[in-house]
Length: 453
Image (cartoon, rainbow, N blue to C red; front, top):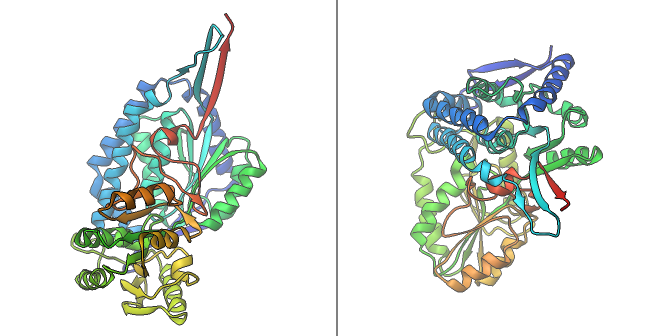
């Protein structure tokens, strides 16, 4: 029997081996998802809403218990894990209320007696999900997908199988029929076969560019709808007229949330020259005051990265950038799974910390001589997930909101996902949208109905 291993990245004392499904068990689950879909798709919104609201209630009741599963498996501070669970409850509440309106048939005025657009479910949707937000990434897919009448198949990251099992149990306990939401305990090398299976009608992936390329190719080969939410190298632009104190406070959360292991984390800090000295000085003070340690302690600001291999990858990216001319102001040291919060200045395009996605607590700082140059540096990235700009100028707001090549632009606030707004990127950050009305309509059949007079 093959196993998937989960190791506590803080102290390595908790090691759990989760058995992989056999081929027979996997086939049974895929067939179950297809079979149950035929009846589940006929349920009304009130039934689906009641079940989803019950999921939200269970999440709220068990916030601490579920948060401890997250922290024990991938190491984020417990307060952030609790916030993640609460956000999952929010997205459940949101779609339980909004889905009927989002998917209501839309009448169109034509010469027909009746012409309308209907939104109907596709069938079983495979979700390939990452470890960094082990509950949230799943729930922002599952809540709209299930409300639309689809069934869900989860292929989660190997190191967060405890989270995956907990979520399947929640959906069952909340009253969703058996087979509507199922965890597939399989390794990544078996995903292609699942995508190819006749039961699977669509696939969504949140993960790396390499994983997205592989899944998109397989989905395309079988003509199946695909949504990709991939990496990012978000710019954090601070212009001369910004409130520097506000920008600094936001920068700490924007870069260090989840240990910096977030696709939408601020990664490239582009400072207009007039405020760069004050910003860097304030950043050094705030970084020095961080409390690093046991992520289960409520006052811990920064825990370990998810694994030693992840910490080593960040170490390499920083070292290569320093070799290319970046200057290390603080940090740059690794201790097992811990990587010290790091500030680099003199960063330039071509360096790993500019060109690549850095999944760790690294502030890569560049300077710009004008808002226009700051925008140019922001757009120079191959990614296009989101960016934030701090300014008091209406002219600069118009410049960035219109010309930034991103899926999202946040002004005087950090980039974040919100159930009420669509979420997704362009360029190497993927395609398709999650959340809001756009998200729930990704995995439906948009059917035209024409009835002659």
